Length: 257
Image 1 (cartoon, rainbow, N blue to C red):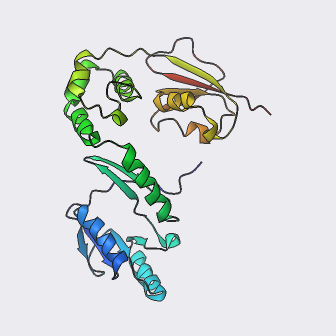
Image 2 (cartoon, rainbow, N blue to C red):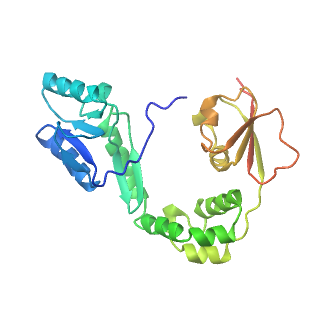
Image 3 (spheres, rainbow, N blue to C red):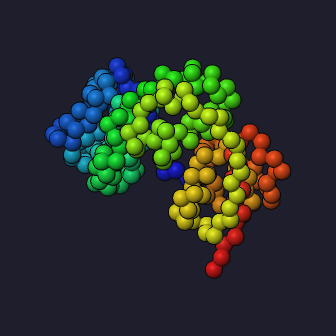
């Protein structure tokens, strides 16, 4: 399954962004750019990004064409087909930013999802992120192996874990002072559907945590895409005898009527 857009977080502090248009749509984009620290400029300025919030269709299309001819990436308000990039709905908790995008097809849906997430994500999430950042050296000293370190952090951040982000846990130092070395393990299961939405919660969590994914040839890419991007994919009919240093998920496709 291909991505319609690749989500990116761009640092705009002090960088020029062209903004064209007047009225509330343009002002809403200006407020967002101001929050990001961007330098809002006019059409003739040199910039890599531009936002066109012109209401008149002919004028908007002409501006979009001029900007794209200069190699500038364009966001065209209410014109998703003309957009090179879109601006997501945002939930912010300090350094933690959750962005919800729909490819420009439904700003209302993105806003509704943002409102739901606002009620789910605790205010202390930013404190937790900053604590983990401050503990990087201590984490490397405690868990020198990268895969082991990733498993330890994953276990702490899991539901009910010592640093469960949705439970408001923020005591990174306290957790690290008594964190045990996580054991490597093997997870193996049989799929009963080609639809990734049919994965059980246990299967989805195992995929998300795996360092290596052993799978049969008939497992569809849409399922494998649920694993981490940096997890190694190995096509195989059977698990290795020893799990080694990573968590392994064996996906055996067996679609039943």
